[in-house]
Image 1 (cartoon, helix red, strand yellow):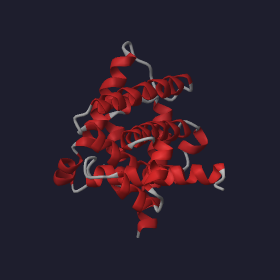
Image 2 (image 1 turned 180 degrees about the horizontal axis):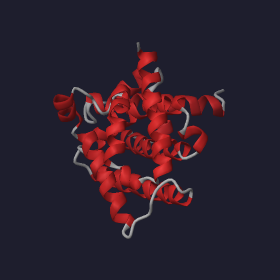
Image 3 (image 1 turned 45 degrees about the vertical axis):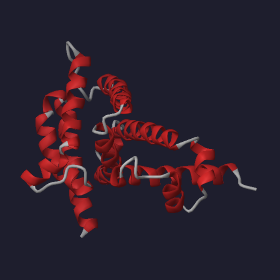
Amino acid sequence: MRSETDDLTTKARIRDVALDRFPNDGYAATTIRAIARSADVSPGLVVHHFGSKEGLREACDHYVVAKFRETKLAAMEEENMADPGFAASAYRVAEPLLRYFAWALVRGHRAADDLFDELLAEARAVTEVAIDKGMVRTSPDLATRITLQMALMLGMVVLHRHVERNTGIDPIEAEGIARLTPTLLELFSGVFEEDFLKVIEDAYREGAADLAGSAG
C-alpha cells in the first residue's frame, strides 16, 4: 500500500516531468502515456493525481506561480538577500520555471491570461511586503508600475532567443540570469531604496561568481 509521502513524491515527479516536456515537446505532442513513461509510473497514476492532461497543465501553472512567490519572499529576508549563496541558488531555481513560463505565455490559450494575472497578483502582494520592509519605494500608481515591470520582465523571457542572438546571453539559463542581473538592477534601480540596492548588487554579483565557479 502506498503511503501519503509516496503519493506526494510521485505527484511532484510527474509534475516536474510535465514542466520539462510541455515546453520542449509541445502540449499537443505530450501525451499522458509519454509523461508516465518519463516519470516511471503508470498512465492511470497520472490521471489519479491530476484528473487529465489539462489538470496536469493547470497544476504546473499554479506551481510555477507559487515557486516564484516563495523565492521572492525568501529573497526579502535580509540575511538571505545579502548571502551570495542564496543568489546562486535562486538562479538555478529560476531556469526551469522561466522555460515553462516562456512557453505558457505564447501558447495562445486563455490559460496564459490566467497565469499572467495570477503571477501579477502575487507580485503585488510581494511588493507590498517589500515596501513595508523599507526595501522598495512606493509609487503614486503602484498597480500600474507593477504591471509594467511584469510586462517588461516577461517580455525578456518570451523574447529570450532574440536577447541571446544580440548579447550572447540566454536570459532563461541560470548563468545568463546571473550575468544579466547587474544590468537589470541598473534598469530598475529607481524602484529600490538606495541602501537596499547596494546590498542586493553586492550579493548578486558574488552569487554570479559562485555560480560560474561551480559550473567550471
